[in-house]
Length: 133
Image 1 (cartoon, helix red, strand yellow):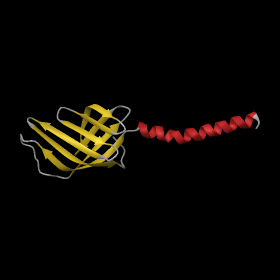
Image 2 (cartoon, one colour):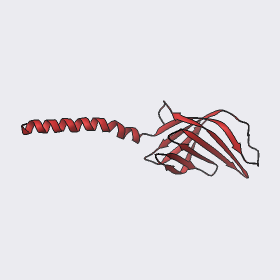
Image 3 (spheres, one colour):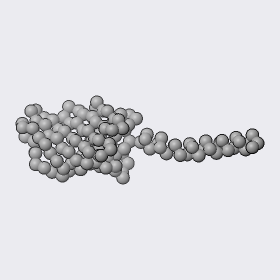
Image 4 (tube, one colour):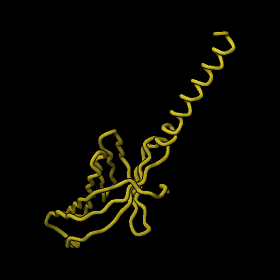
């Protein structure tokens, strides 16, 4: 094969490889948004928390590169600190809430803390069709 054809062939092969890999690189660079449904509650004795079982929805935005997690509910946002994101789990917390999501199953636990009281809500998350804020 002439040198010119070899170079064109290699260039085309490189371009095809790049076209295949580029969407995967950009997909991991964008934050993901999870829609979560919380439907089980566990509490410890203590102060005045509404402990009735309720089905409620929250959204969780996670940015792997920036290592940030934000919880959204009813138009409010809670950016979490102390964030860990691995291939298995992502979690983070503030002074009064913590969240943990098992990535493979979508299982979530959201814990709320108050003086002498902890409320843990459990549920399931799925990938949102919306873009992360």
